[in-house]
Structures are given as structure tokens and as C-alpha cells.
Image (cartoon, rainbow, N blue to C red):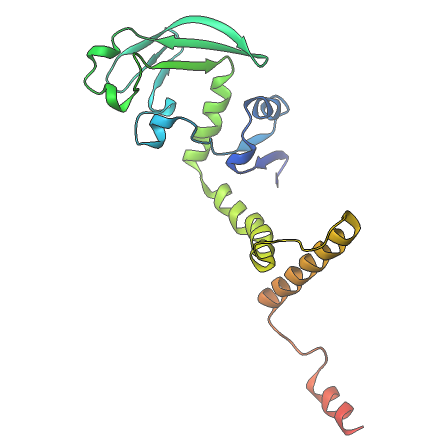
Length: 198
């Protein structure tokens, strides 16, 4: 999506990749992308990483209960430098059940986590690009899939599948044009009446 001189990228959570977001950031591309929920405790309504407050000056993560998860060590995983944080006071915390089922809650923070946090803040402040994406991008995929049914494609081999898919796309495009433009006669009424007489 182009907005003035600035290049903007809008995608859904299936395309979330920290390294790709960093590459876009370094190239000057503004990214709008929701982060997928991967934490089991967060899916159950517990505290997620976004509920923490990171204090850069102290290099600590502060939890809602006020506890500070201190930096312990850094290691490399899949080519990413990951910083590990935890505290030893979890056992006495009153809200531990909303935080972790383990002995202590451990947090991993990528060295470029600030770039990912900026993307999330931008999305929280202005969710409109995601709504616009759903309205303009999602239904061209969802509508043909719905019409094609559970089997989607019935042909086999690439040339036949390509033809079948092209027909599905053509049918979708014709329907879309009719929905936008309305159903108009192909030629004026006067010409139609003359053609009937002849």
C-alpha cells in the first residue's frame, strides 16, 4: 500500500515474522501487523508479554504485580540473539496463577523487540488499516473458496487446475462488477426495441 512517499505494508497475523518486520523497518517501510497469540497462559486469559512494562534503563520487565524480572543471560536461537529474564519471587506472588503454571515466569526478549513493540503500538493506536485490508483483500479469497465448496478444486494436474481456477476468478470478478455497478442492459432500450422489430 502506498501512502504519499512512504511505503506501508499491511498483513494479517499469519505473516508475522520478527526478522521480516526488522527488514521492513530498516528499509523505511511502515508495517501494520497484529501479533499472533502463542502463549498458552495468554490464551486462557492470563498475562502476556504485552502486559509487562519494559524499562530500558534498568533492563528489566515489570509485571502487573510490580515484580521486576531481571536480565539473566543471552543466547542465540535460530540466528536470533535472545535475552532471558525471570525473578525468583514468583512462588509468593498472589496472582501467580494468572502468570504461569511453572515454578517461575520466564520472559524472552529479542534484541530488536523495540521494533516489534512499535508495530503493536501503531496498530493499537490506529486499527483502521487492518479493517481496510479485510474489506479489500480477504473476500476475494474467501468468496471463491466458499463457492467452490469443500473440495475446492476438482481437476487434477496443473494445466487443468489453472483453467478451473481462472474460471472461478472470472466468475468472482463478474459478480463483483455486478455488485458494484449494478445490472445494466448491454445496449440502450431504443436499440433493443429496434432489434426486436427487425
